[in-house]
Image (cartoon, rainbow, N blue to C red; front, side):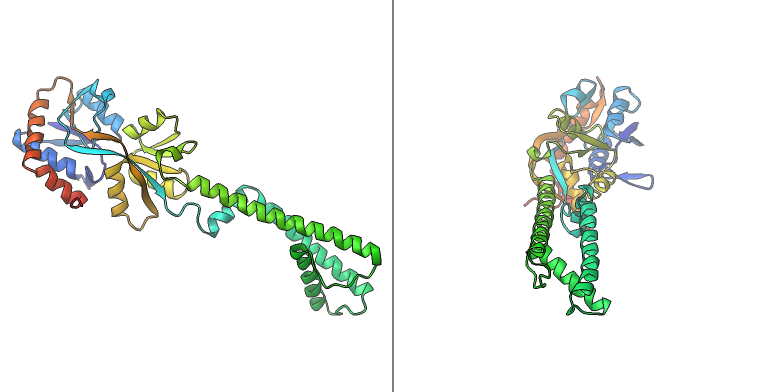
Length: 329
């Protein structure tokens, strides 16, 4: 018989043209009990797989397929063989480090303003050097020492409002120094507020620990999966991906704010790819169950369900769960 599969580690793994995984192992056990020989046909996502079963293109669907009312209207499900639910995966390095801060300052247009400020400071340094070389007899005669002295005074006034520079023009000089002090205070205030605001926004953007934190953000999901429908029902923007590596690549490049998907799949991926900067946050929500799907009114549903119940009673399912996910604490 032709069996449709969707690659979703560790339930369905693919190496070359061979399929393995927890769902495959359970199905093979069922097929052996029912004297069935399976020929696997791969589908790119859940939607195409369920559609193929409903249209009779394949005789069964084997993967971590969540039992839902919408799907049960077009296919028949077996007895559940796995309890699951949704979880959230985030980029653990999002919003941290100098690179991210510089990038955010650039996006906000602050770096361009900083460049203008630097240009003004350099111009003021040159003009002040030319001025003092002409009017201050005690000013260094060599350009290198003169520019260094002027740069020190310019930055000192701009950052602290204080300088030891001589006032050569009485009240006019005092007015000019006051003007420069006000300009310096404005520079410091602007730079402090801009950096603080960017860091605050970064903290808010990346502070995801629960479902409520996803509002207003783009969230990656498996195309046609229950997470996609669940988030859309709560008006959360979704970005569909066919497979986990694609979604994770988008997450670590900050194209999406988080990934929501089947908890066991996300946990397994994070464990198997410990070198990647991703982690799971929050508790399991929207609990669900996995089952195998058949075309409506298929005579294979009942014997397959009996075989699944038998596998539960013999603890074969528990052994497979421990094999792929480790022993329960």
